[in-house]
Image 1: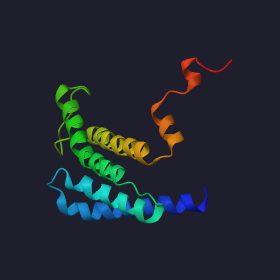
Image 2: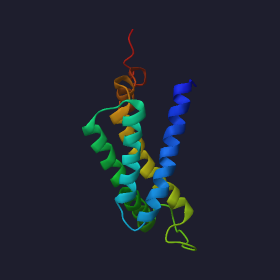
Image 3: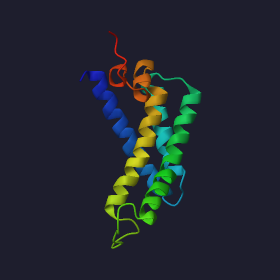
Length: 140
């Protein structure tokens, strides 16, 4: 990894941790913790990475805000439909396996929106398309 990629990864990690500390104060609200995380990431991208796209910033903050309620909705749906079989509710409302799935749902929403909004056009296209070789359309 080059030095820029390392400093970017460390910076984003620090910003994410800082937003978690701030968001701990708003545990009872559904949209605020995601918005705090989204705003922190957007500020980092604007100040240190040189992004200047207000519409993309707003879309990313929106995606971060709705990722928690959507992950909770997905987790609840899995729990109540019995898709994972009978789950014991010993220590909390959700067993750890469902919390893992819910975290994956929320992370996927944030990761996909970040890739679609801030990646290079080539990478953005590779994120949502199937390569030509796997479709059987490779050049002859």
